[in-house]
Amino acid sequence: MDLSDVASAANPDIDDAQALMRGAARLLWQMGYSAIPEFILPDGRRADLAALGRKGEITIVEVKSGIADFRADNKWENYAGYCERLYFAVSQRFPHELIPDHAGLIIADGFGGAVVRESPVLALAPARRKALTLRFARAAADRLMRVEE
Image (cartoon, rainbow, N blue to C red; front, top):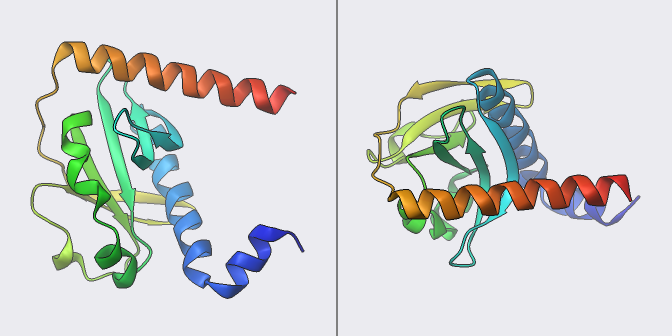
């Protein structure tokens, strides 16, 4: 048993969050996006999933495994300045009415997901998009390099 097994046993929401993230990432892939988890934004916050579309559009997905997680973590409130679309990925049993109207809604599980409410398109300055795209590319390349080591 490693440390992540201990953490998961102590908090089943960790397993749920990982499954939701996997399902949301699979959905994004099907939609034509390449996603990476735990993407660090320029302000130091860590987005659960960041995705880059075929035309360079940036999407952020905030994964919420339960109501307590939703209420305790409000870092997502600043994500709008770093993406063109913002979604929440939650399970079918999560109360959907808690998700703010200014974000899209993805229902996911460990195998996939579905967009049940589209995100409004947010404005993103071209210079910021370029800087985020370079940050995304470097993060993805760095992770690939570490896998190869």
